[in-house]
Figure (cartoon, rainbow, N blue to C red):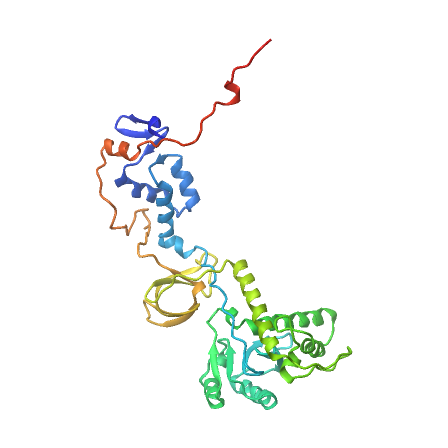
Length: 395
């Protein structure tokens, strides 16, 4: 109920000590308040102390959300909900591979993880060219057989034509992860962190890291895995490895392993999605988007590149985009992209709006119309006098 607060000062309608801005001037007032690309909170505080009009806060929020400059430095979108891989049907069917290093002496570790058993195969390498990598993989295949599926990142060894030809010859399906999105190859990345911790411990204690690594792998392969509920060696070879601890051999219940794995994965997915506030992205094929910079040259560089991209294909969180200027195509995670609204506000150096909305309503700006828009509404709250105004009885 604001009718009692309205009055005229000359030809200007005010509410208390704030000017009521006519509709045709509101966009210009917002532009003035947004000079310097002030944020939503700053703009609201600035405007509330000087002017007023109905639904002012909503217009401020919409303006900042569609400002091109503010979009470039805004926070990235939350990640999409996790998608768990289906449990393989047998050991060494689906493999994840990656390189860990370089280590202090210049060596690298080729890490292979079996998705079924979580069994680890680690090979120390000095030369990590494609040819050397293929040679080491052939040695591994001689022990465990040829897998059906490879999950690898976009390292130069795994994206070369030589490696792709090798996979085709061996009948292996190669699935490359999205660039700059290591979470897609999370199984091997998680194992890399575990191995790296043991290498740090060996380095700090002055021990031989190679010996400590093999001791860790023996313990890891023999211990019950938290996701499958069975030891990796037990699922891989159908038996438990002999260690310093006494143990009794047992038969693996494969159906039990499958159910247990599914339950634990679902628990982990729900927990991770809730913690990361994951939600499905609204990116669609044909949308114009901004892409997060993969490298920032200086600290003043925005998180998102100003170049526009067009979405060509989207499969889950894997999005293929094309640059508007060079027509080059890239693969990016949906979390690294931001949809450009159809109505974008751009501020030039003089503080003027260079691209405004064309569908602003045209209306009569006479004083009578303003008063009609501000018609009071009856409050439904029960009013009571404060205790200080009540009558008191004295004796």
